[in-house]
Length: 165
Image: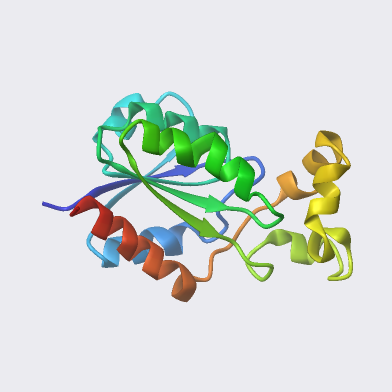
């Protein structure tokens, strides 16, 4: 039986720019992939073995996943690990879901097209966090990602492994 993966799509910021390629790679590995926009899709989430999304509020839909399903969070560039883990990682584990994090590198973020490499976005993202939510919302939180499929593929395989645990 093929594991079901739901990829949460969005129109706003933090969208997965190569979503079709990620879906194709997951399909190639044996997932039955459904792509749906964030919103009222509880039945889709409940039927998914794997929920995949870039860090955003849509990941709260993990509450509708069946026990032992997998959450695969793509964590954007910019020192987002505390938010990723505390907003979605630990809650997933607390709900007996299996959790995988993929951290975007600076070549996978759309911020590389907006800011020079010397900018705090790249040189010291923690400094932006210290400036408060408004600065963070105007910089780090306004990025899209395009995952490097060669780098991302092992995380898809990890999701498969977690389903078989």
